[in-house]
Length: 400
Image 1 (cartoon, rainbow, N blue to C red):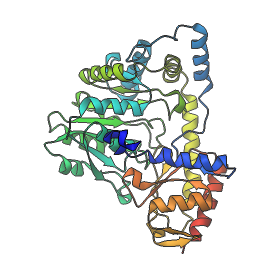
Image 2: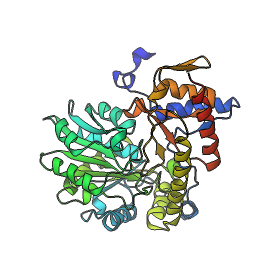
Image 3: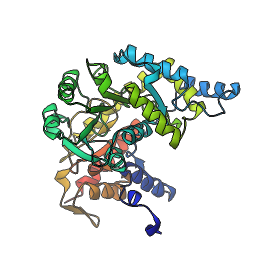
Image 4: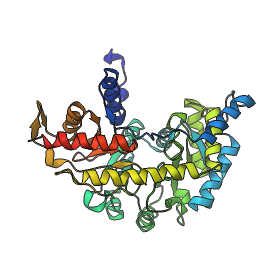
């Protein structure tokens, strides 16, 4: 049946994180004790007050019909208020907000509204797996600028300037970053903004979905800088900071023309996000923030545990992530080695080896633009993390 499918879908890569999670689930269903460290999925339950808000919305019976395409007005107002007061994006208003079914949907909407065939988008790499595929789906050309382990995986303003061409339409980065956990400082973002402001019709997509899991202090938004609001689409959502992955609520804050364009395309593709989920999201953003702070504290503790155990594994090289809940170690020391019928040629092979021999699922760094690395999520219990690291150390030690 492949002959019936479009080139668009045949040329699209499958999400590596979801593919590895699928393999892990299949092995678990066979009774194998798999520890899953591949998905960026908080292991916490959605905070109770958010759950209760959803129950109350159901009982009210007012949110069963189609919601407004851009989201309920009170949620959009609460988001814009949060952006003004917490992110110093003073121009943010409800009219600049479009609520979608997750930050991934927000990013897809944005690129479908911005990109013409052949337009280039500069991606700060390592990058979240779906950026490049969404850009290509929209007809664009991904252009990678690479940060390295030595500079905490952060590409620089100088690299950005060198990568710009007459075809460059946008740039995209995440901070805190998936997959590296790196965080761009205010001074680094100011330098990036200075480059962007030299060019007409060049916009920034700032993915801030891990904003609430930041170990450096308050997250800095590039849209708060002078002259950048009208050039920036800020992407955020509720999945990570509020443990609401399955609720599927994300949003953009964008200049009015872009917000209206995103609302227009969303009206044709999905209409508005689920009404009950939006009521839950409102309780999250406008309610008690302590559960989110407690979760971030737990991730901070887990980071310390995993860092200590990683540093005990000969051959592993890692930086200290500043946010999110990932490590992104360099594993080239294991390339060319063999054990248990496996030969490790690259990070893909290493992940399959560890899944088979250690029963731990990780994700190859190749999916994130860094083929010498693997991504390890520490959004798991302390007990699981300690056991996973024990298994990984043993399996890697057997490679020769």
